[in-house]
Length: 585
Image (cartoon, rainbow, N blue to C red; front, side, top):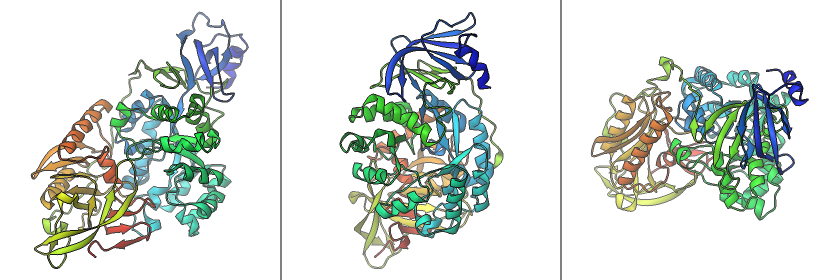
């Protein structure tokens, strides 16, 4: 709608479509809280102040005694890692007060290329959630920068530059520093093209510090969501990066990173919030960016600063602060009515002046699209997969092996060592020592390309758990205490077209099917949450102590520069050395 229609409303010569009366306005630009009315015309704010301009046709929303904040803006999140289809993804975020999110659809891009990206973007744009499109650089890079082959269906170099030219494109999504440090000509050209077009480079700098960050920053890398300590956040902020404080599934960093603000006194305006990876169960039970705000406040960040971080900071970062991020005339009427700032309990959510959430209830009736046939049945397994294909060979009766060490609450894994028994020439897991098998199976070509290794930290007492979701590959990955349950898990997950699975005693005992791209559910949000809750309960009964077992499983796999020891479909990979290493020493 044209802004011209707002002029007469602002001047008091015409009535608004809606008036939000008597709320306490949270002004994230002046850092004030004051009582005022908000006049809305079409989808934008026309006036903020004292007014009697309701008009006979104006809707009136009473906000007396409550706070009115801008809608929350995510800065780094992958929709496919919520495992919700696009309509349910939008409903889940909007219900938690997030009114805009960056999205590159790179999981879909890995599996189905440009067709998958375009289809999902168009579906998401038909919802009230605002889409800030970024180019999915990692869907092209995958693990190329580490020397591993890309998946066969993903986007190519030409696609990167084509998407950068799309009118809705705001920039690049998380290209890592390594190709820049190695002066990869394609990545250097892509960065320079983005800067020339005035677009942002939303960064990803796990494992890089000091001079490496300086080189990344000078080429346009503008942010990082991988900081895990306050000291790292301070160092990177001083080198020009904005720090996106992550709180999601598998990575819980807000409480620690808040120290950069509260103890090191770094200006909170250099900080952002993100979830990066978040399960639908976590959204349902704990929240999204509203939870980031609560956690930051509990860590000592002033509530006004926390709301700034979640709104105007993000809008300015994406260079869309002329459209959103604050409660001022001309901005989209994307607004939250909350009961209290520190607890940040959301009462109502408006997008473009339309009430979309009231008292926790999502109001619009949204219909999911009919997904094309090619996004189904994307998981292919060798027909003659047998137990011998899953074995790790060794001589003697005892083998010393490298193992992946995982821990709760972090995406990082370490290198550990163990001595395991050898039976009939095959290395055996040691459940008592919590050392079990991990395999990744190529899901694309139907070949027997299988990486096999051992992992510690899952505490499975029996059975196997598996998934077709793992960043940058989206292959089949399974951990298990025995090869038979691993084989059954691989077969069952293939029949379903993808998903999360738990197998025990040779039988499937629980599963969340993800038939769309092998990544997304075709069910409603609440149904998906309930299935995932049931699956988690079964996995806990199997002994697993991880809070997010399937996200820890995903990041037991090679995902760019996130170290250290990981599995891929080629075998065991040392990220720091950037090469495959032997399982058996």
